[in-house]
Image (cartoon, rainbow, N blue to C red):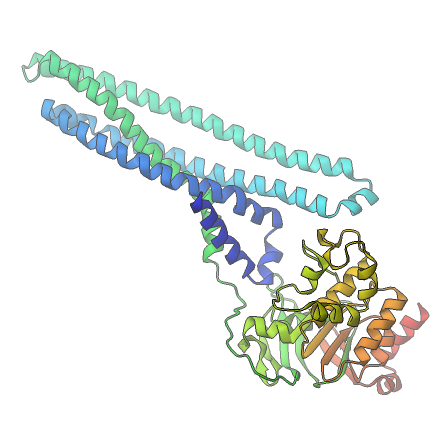
Length: 487
């Protein structure tokens, strides 16, 4: 229905705008469950319940009018049914709502298991853990099944309690009606009519309270949906600045940073350094020294706890979102291709680019040769399923180059390349023109040719200079080079 489409679109739009910390905290299976099952449950119940509620309410009010005309005393007595039914429904709703939320979470967990195993099937196969993963998935399904059985049992108990309540009220009605006839306040015909009206009213009242309970039951599904819809990302992308010309001067000024998931661990501590415009700067250091964290802050994936990351003297958060990521292009450690052709992946997020632009970017990234050798050329799709890791990485580099960014960030981008392709990327780095290049690499050839090298350790800048200068200091950089050469 249109409502399902509307809710799903709003939810998806909200999700893709969330900060990266959100996706580190919430598993993929939970998100897909909210987008599929929860939105359907939520959207179907609203129009259906509204329609039934209005019709039932009108009938209930009308029947109570007839009953008052027959005996206002018995009508007042029967009104006791409403608070009693609501009390029973309230007890049931509290339990039922908690169970429904648990069921939704359990189903989301099952989705997590499927996504995790399918996306890592090569690792599963290499460790021969197919049986263990099947058992893990079966256990998650069994957990969901037990929760549903508990839900069904509570429904039976609820139905029994409602039935006993109805029968008790009927007995009271018959006794009081007999007293009314005995005292001459009511005829037998009126009592029979009243009992028939009351039977219908009881049914309608039960429906009204059930609709109310059903609406509360859907709170379990709607709760997470609205939580995600209303969630404001901690990193805002509402900057408006877009300069006509950009030099590409990057500056880190006393930057301290903790990841939201680990607020007590500072990964960067008062870090300050400059990326001169039109120069190649290498960022090196042991694992966990904060190199990738610097890249994440430059890309405005996170906000630092203190200090500023500046691009041409302006905090990166002040720039318009699309403009910033056209001017600062990132090629990460793990190449990511999307569904679509090679052409679609190179021009991802862009419009109006010619075949010459695509071919030029592919040639700069040393990808044109293998693309033309493919049977479909630039039209090969399926997320590059038949491509090697190195080929995918070169496509990712082409995707960055076609934007003609003023700042190019290569975060271990050459780690998966063969020697021939790696040499081509080294030539690209050296022919950067007026582009600012930040390189994070373990291969020291790239670092040796950089105009400047910054050495990080424990989230702090410990050394800075050219390759000969740092080798002469015989500090951490010297040890890293010696270790690399030994390997």
